[in-house]
Image (tube, rainbow, N blue to C red; front, side, top):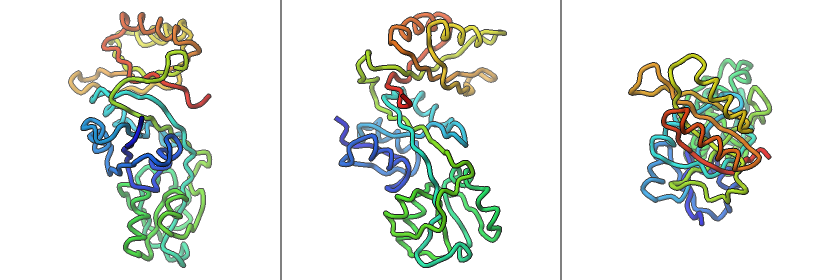
Length: 275
């Protein structure tokens, strides 16, 4: 049973919202300012599971998090998609014209840059976390400072929302994964998605051949991400997500890929949250 979950960010952050939606709201949450600290909490058994954002529909993959999961031999046991709606918020009784600086996570700033072109007087400043800025404004009663965070954060820290849904692309979704020290606890008959990692030969057509094998085994490729192998210049590892109707199809593919690829690693077997 999951009793303690570690998140990147503070309460009110998007990771915190996922913890409330995926787990029971009574779960104990450990707030961490970095993903490295999140992973440390899991390895030291301070937490039972952790939540990590892996990709966003606007900004793309969060590549360092793939490496963290891989390097520490952790396992993805579930996933959760969250509709990210960014709000501009500030200490009460101020207008956008009063705001001189807006602080937020770099990805949030990137997703909202079009909105701020209408307000050239506002300076955008990168910070550690969305909700942490909102918490700081509340704690120190900061004026002329804005935060980009969730509406939930504005409610939690008693701030006024000056503008709703300010991200450039209104449908803005982030995929989060639930990570544990051990592999999936989902019964095989319920598993219909997997995350794997492998290296391929540096030969023409080798990756295409591997992808064809996946297709022949009735696997649907939903994500492929390459990552440089530090100790092997110009060689890459591939992180791949696949979905399938029956576990036996995935089992067959694993047997073949184990022969065709180098360093095949199963990062997780779990339920597809998109179904």
